[in-house]
Length: 63
Figure (cartoon, rainbow, N blue to C red):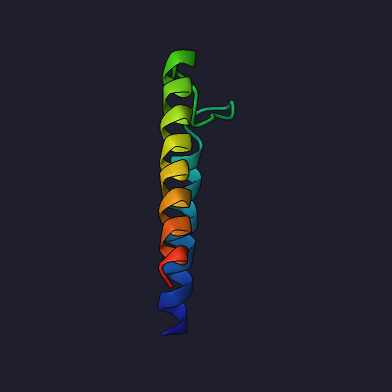
């Protein structure tokens, strides 16, 4: 049982090492996106957060 667990662990480490070695430079989540798309996303998130804050404020007043 212990041997199988160690073998599985080693296999996972090897696979992770191979998969993680695709590019030598770090990548970001915004890489390849244009500034306009990022601005639109941030505006949509801000609007959604505002809607959530408004709805939670309204529900607190009902109690």
